[in-house]
Amino acid sequence: MNKLNTETSFFSVVKKEKNFILYFTVFFFLVGALINYCYPYIDNTSDTGGYIRWAQENKYGGTRPLGYSHFIDFIHQINASSAFLFWSQLFLFFISLLINFYVVLFVFDIKSIGLKWTLFISNIFFISGIYSANLAMSDSLFLDLSILLISAVLLFIKRPNAVIFISILILLLYSIKIRPIAAVYPGSLILVFFLCIKKKYLKFLASAISIIVILIYVNYVKNRTEEDQGARVFSSFGGWQLASNALHVVPYLNLNNPIIETDDEELQFVDSYVRQSYPYFKHKYPKSNEVSYEFIWIDSLPLRPAFYTWRNNNRQLGYYPAWNYMGDIYNRFGTEVIKKYPNLFLRYYILNNTQRLIFPPNEVFDHFANTGSPGTYERNWFNWSEKEPIQPRHDVFRRLLYINQYSYPVLWVVFLLSLAYFLIYIKTCSRCLSPILFHSSIFLISFILFYSMASVFAAPINLRFLFPIRVAIIVFSFLMIHFYQLKKSVSKK
Image 1 (cartoon, helix red, strand yellow):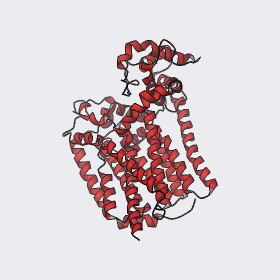
Image 2 (tube, one colour):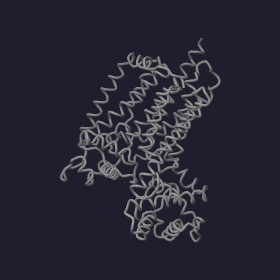
Image 3 (spheres, rainbow, N blue to C red):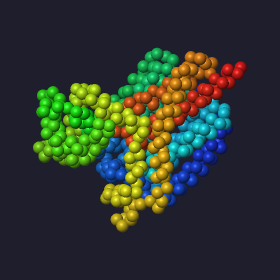
Image 4 (spheres, rainbow, N blue to C red):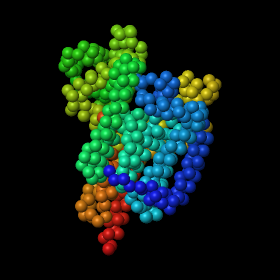
């Protein structure tokens, strides 16, 4: 990788366009003050208490990764108020957007005032991203890391060097610590390494290092989970979720016969429980055009009753050791079901979930006014008294969030049009489609596709899961507008 100092060039762009720092700052304080006034208590869900509990105990093997728990613990050491957590998350969000803005201007040498303002406006009017800073969950932090990762990769495409490469690895590692779905990011990164690094052995070395970093972290988490919970798993929740996804095929099977063929007694137990319980639970299963995440959380669906039954037969295990052990069983069960019934899984889970990719439900963004009774962990953590009403003063953002839900079909149309334009003109204007623009487009397209496919497979999609896709689509469509302007200017010469 070439050793090249790009700081001067980058900061010259920042200096030249310093007015946008002022615009970002003014908007940041105005919207922050508005949200803080209307929502004096940070939004909390049933997951918030879990994040707080594991921040206090610092044990692996909870229902969520520990990355966000470590973050809120760090913030809590500085200031325990929920307002400080909100302002911290909003600050990080705007910093990541500001960096991304200047990176795009620098990498693609944007001269057009119209394009600069288009990118600025599309950044600041990220309504759900802004509001997620007022949510005590991992969404905002994961979005920030994803934005910074995209920005770092674009810088690497312009000038491959060791410093940026190390920055990419650090952002990748912390992204996975927040959410395991970031494990798909190396797919796009490796593509970039092979496109942009000149020396062949360095292409393979950079790719291998990115994979090794993930494997080392996965092994570390497995060791810590085994130490803390007695089960060597990376994500027990992932096993529960996989089984939940697989259960979407159950209503369409002949349950007089075993669902899977196995000699594994633990898998036989799950198989038998699902089949025997189905007549009692079948009205709770999702309809043929739906997907559901309730298998994991609802006691009137088979996964939790099976877990309780299994735990009663293994009383020596505590709740979370049993949760992790059962997560491993469910991972194996879900894998076998999907392997045996791929067509049914495709029809009743993948295709239905793909529809949610296009038109994602708002989920937790709808719930603030209905979740005014935080648990003990939340009240103690944020120093909220028992008598304190956890409600907004004005729920002004609700309608904006409803409208935002409808933006994703538009975003996908914009992406498809931009993709079509890229594919049509990829060979017709070699003078304006520079290697940087070409490689960046390939990276963004692959990022969108890999993340989309992983999201569809991983769990029922909700709007907050698609934040990184929105950022990548905005940047890619922006590049296609830039490409169009370059093409137009070349044709005039």
